[in-house]
Image (cartoon, rainbow, N blue to C red; front, side):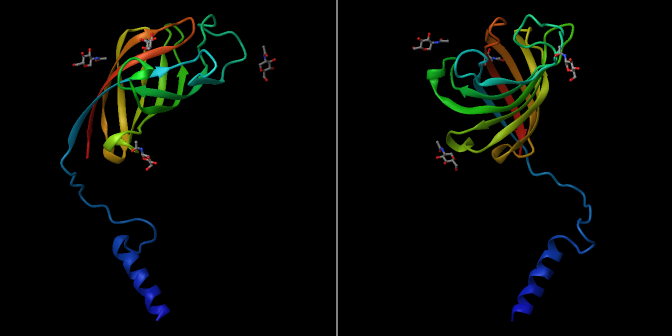
Length: 185
Ligand SMILES: *[C@@H]1O[C@H](CO)[C@@H](O)[C@H](O)[C@H]1NC(C)=O
Ligand SMILES: *[C@@H]1O[C@H](CO)[C@@H](O)[C@H](O)[C@H]1NC(C)=O
Ligand SMILES: *[C@@H]1O[C@H](CO)[C@@H](O)[C@H](O)[C@H]1NC(C)=O
Ligand SMILES: *[C@@H]1O[C@H](CO)[C@@H](O)[C@H](O)[C@H]1NC(C)=O
């Protein structure tokens, strides 16, 4: 009885992944119909004060470009930035951007961001999209690449139009308006 159960389980597994070892046969890929979703929210990246949402985790131990700013070339920050419906924190938190960014510009102050934008309200609760992009923060308006997603945003690709609502280069604090276009399953 137990033996038969084990055999059934093994045969079941072999039906899903043929028993060559550990991989399936490669077949033509038929993508499901894609959907598009637009998002609009504000990101709060706060370096100053008692409750920063972006914290320095590493920086060079010698003088680099933009040493007179809170984000000299080569510094790396980890973030848990709040996302809100409007520009004010009181407008309602809908998620957070967790990840890292690094100050990567030597001639012009600029970042590369590695961010997972996760949502915590409504039908998007538990879903997220992944941004990996340059972010030339000295330009008020810029565009970032979206390279993937989870949940509602499985297989997402797209782009985000970013606009500085507040950008304080003395404290490093910023509020950024985000219009995101996602194509996903
Ligand atoms: C930076 O780190 C290197 C390697 O550990 C060390 O030799 C050097 O003294 C450090 N420089 C400063 C300014 O702390
Ligand atoms: C957010 O709203 C509070 C209370 O209404 C107000 O005091 C504050 O100035 C607002 N902040 C911004 C950035 O608009
Ligand atoms: C979002 O999902 C989490 C985990 O499933 C759950 O604990 C939480 O209550 C949900 N929040 C909202 C606002 O639906
Ligand atoms: C986002 O879209 C709204 C509505 O079209 C527009 O008013 C706003 O300027 C856009 N913002 C960005 C950052 O693209």
